[in-house]
Amino acid sequence: MKHEEWMRLALAEARAALLSDDVPVGAIVLDASGAVIGRGRNERELHRDPTAHAEIVAIREAAAALDDWHLTGCTLVVTLEPCVMCAGAILAARVPTVVFGAWDDKAGASGSVYDVLRDRRMNHRSEVFTGVLGQECALLLTQFFEDPARRATR
Image (cartoon, rainbow, N blue to C red; front, side, top):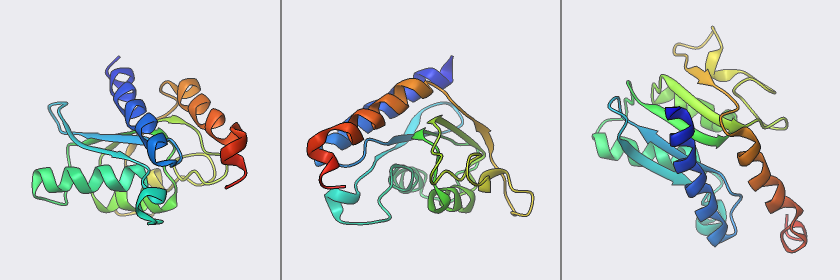
């Protein structure tokens, strides 16, 4: 039940990304007590920064809140399966738990195309919970990419 509550917070971040015409992906980081210590949404268009994915923004905010790059004991909740870059950042930050909504069958790195987060060759692995409010998360993305005005620019 908590995963769904948390995903609703991440979905709110995803919807906020639409204000800057960014792909609607949102993320939150929770500490061990369940308090939100980081929020992020895609900000690539807003900042013209290819690394400004929702997960990266949320991880940076959480690290600043803790004054530590080690996010051990934290949970990352994101509306879309993390890509390779974000999976690398998740492992580098030592995030033990990742919850995501929609699968990314083109660039996913948490079980679809790749499984970086659970790769036994890595020095750290994350427990991954998939498909949480997956249809709702996927619908937001589908509507974004089906919008004729946005399709012309993507």
